Length: 367
Image 1 (tube, helix red, strand yellow):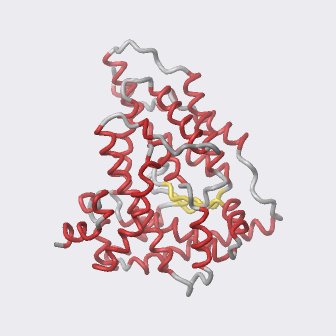
Image 2 (spheres, rainbow, N blue to C red):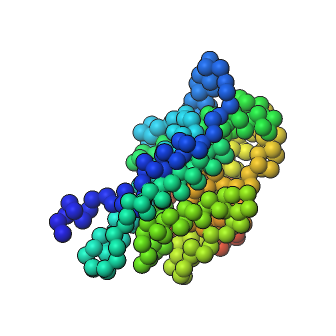
Image 3 (cartoon, helix red, strand yellow):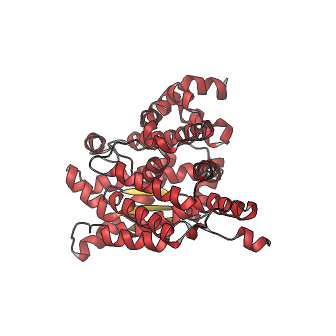
């Protein structure tokens, strides 16, 4: 097999992006009906909120100039997009395809070279996977407010979902301006995290690819993917059980899930702490927003929500919630300057045990 043949992308053989987009397009409900002038103003204010959030996040994190300047340069290479629900779904279809492409292509190439004698993926199976993904994203689209998406492009992109932000602010009775900045702060914190740790994208993607490759196992990749996506829809349904741990088949997968959960816990917990530390001086109604939003936050959203359900990480939700407690525990002992060591090297990331016991991380990293 020549180099070009063996290295070409084969994700389309198990996941039809066109079927996913068509399904999402047909199922995603419209956002609130606003006059054109008002929607234009909302978009402009969200862009302004995202720009304002960068300095606020960097101020809270207290990165030294030697780190903050490279972070700003990396941020400038990325995108900030204010999008509708379908555009958000389309971005996630691209991100999911990018994440799955490596392991899926490797599995299919390996089977071809080893002549397993198993049938090749069918177009019907790829379409079924696409329909399942589109259905899942259509459900999530009304719940997602914003998302930093690191996988679809090299520099990453920040997505702010204007219709859902507007609808959610109205639903919880929040001040619209305050709520827009509050959402932008959370998502911009994620963007800054990846800019402060330029190795983080490849590190997390590597863990995800290794896990997906293991989960595909000896089954048909298309059938396994369709089954996993179908399971996600059941979890998200009204009678959903929140149990996708059956996808985990061995100790290797359990270890990878623990490592991914620890990273997710850190990133989400850190974002929560940063956005709250900005405080009422900048967002007057921040405490009321936090109380109202915490009641709503029963389910994960954004790419994290997709990955959480797809990979069975919902079973680790309790550890995930420990992320903010870990960050606050480190801050009490070492401040932001001490916490910022996590962005220096993958070896300095906390594991799940350290997420639960921040003193252990401080002892290991700071002595």
